[in-house]
Image (cartoon, rainbow, N blue to C red; front, side, top):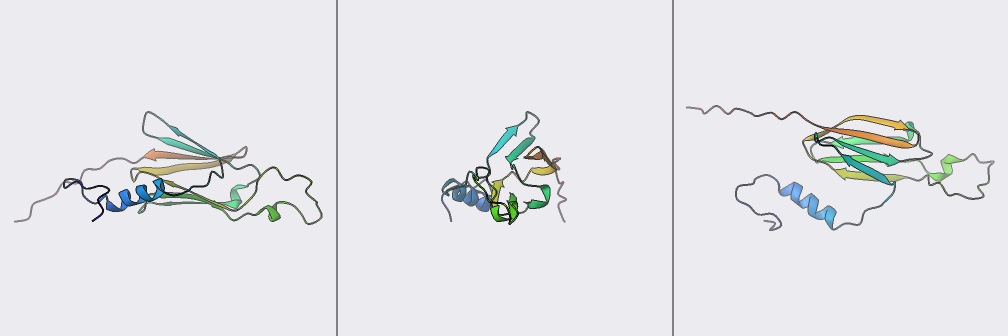
Length: 137
C-alpha cells in the first residue's frame, strides 16, 4: 500500500493521491500560456492564449472518471502558412500541444468559448447529492 496518504477513515482516494503525487513530480510544459481564476461560488475559469488557432484546430475532452481535462491541437506551424510564403520571422507560435488539468470530480465544464485568441473554459460545481441507504433485513 502506498504510504503517501494513509488514513483508515478516508477510503477510495488512492488513485487520486497517486495522480497528484505523479503530477507534482513531473515536468510540465508552459505552452500554451494560461490563466486560472477561482470564484467565491466554487466556479473556475481557465483561459488559454491561443493566437492563430481556430476553434476547429482544438479538441477538448473531460475524462470525468480520471478527473482530467485535456485541451490539445494537432495543428503544426507548417499548416499555418501557404507554400508560396517565406516566413521572415516566426515569433507567434503555432504548434501541436497537449495541455492537461487535473480537476475535482465535483467540477464540470459548462462552456467553452474561443474569442480574440483566448480559449475560455468555465468550470462549475455540480450539485451535491446525498444517497440514502436502506438497511436490508
